[in-house]
Length: 73
Image (tube, rainbow, N blue to C red; front, side):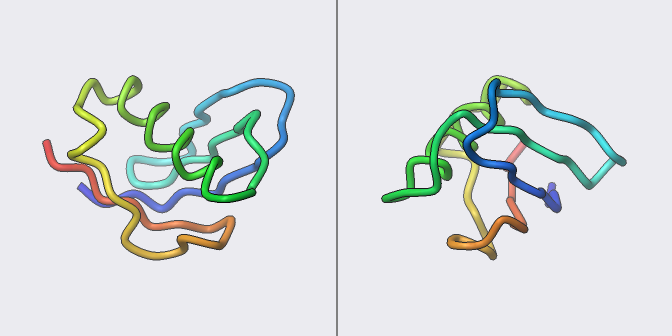
């Protein structure tokens, strides 16, 4: 499954907001420094979709707020 994700770093809480079946907005408390926000994003998606972190990868947008993430189900 591929998801389009809009990341909002340095938010007051970690939260997943579903916009559509394949589009999410994710608020993260982590800053976008040294990949911390990406690590937190993978951790949150892992809990949200109940899959291992190793089954989630960022396909596009490693350094961008707009990302495409692939989750192996």
